[in-house]
Length: 118
Image 1: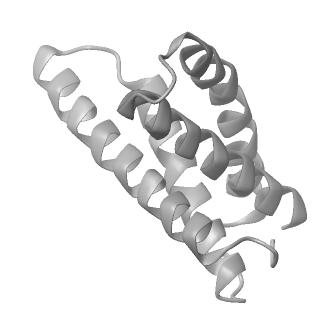
Image 2: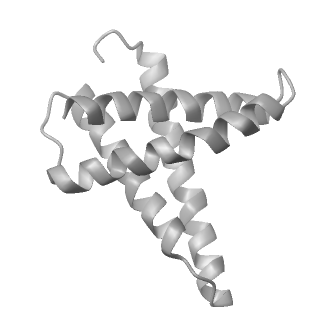
């Protein structure tokens, strides 16, 4: 985790923050429609934990989440990878969407790596 460049660290944190914002907006829209929000709530908790773990790893601090919450977050983040990888494979080279997906994949991989260590 120490060999990660400052650019990648910044992009990863921004990617997680963007994902959190998008999930929160989606959750708000779904709540208004009375939809089942269990999956997005679970993913949102996992993404928040992933961000917290990255920030704590890079700032040499203990994570603020319990062992059980971190284990669940790791599993949920791993479960998100295939759909993002598929979208990445289907995206156009050089497109903004592909860049976003590439950064999201990098940030998820780093978070999973940090979760495996913690």
